[in-house]
Length: 136
Image (cartoon, rainbow, N blue to C red; front, side, top):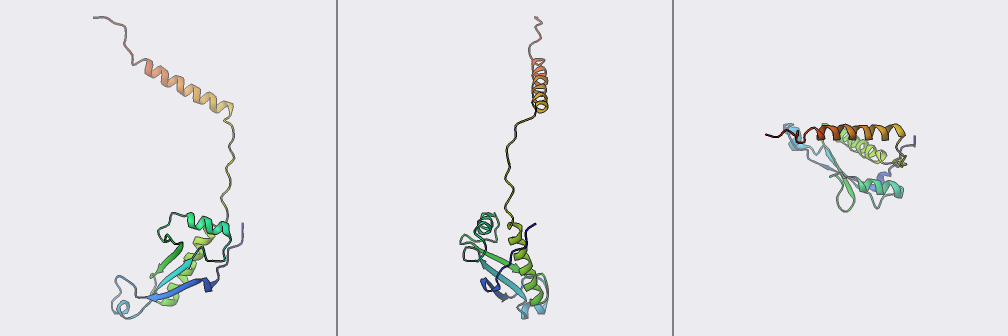
């Protein structure tokens, strides 16, 4: 297993915003939610990891290649910051290892025989649907 990739915190822009939803007066007064922005093409990640990150079909990645994570689960700004960074690390490390290359193999003799047996059974079923040959 490969070691987790390190992300330089200077490449990440963190801004505090007000959280949405229920929470009473605390939500209205305190900017405890975190917006984390990570520019993938400008980062110091290896090129292969950048390509796999940009290839993800994730709606948090903009067309410019900026990953935006909003964390507002917790009541404090520090907890939300930790949550946002852990989600960033989790996403980056999910594509850190390149996928295994599939090598095509030939079908086995038994699998070819099973396929042909299934085809002949199906053919027999369909032949039974034909006209019976009885004349009125």
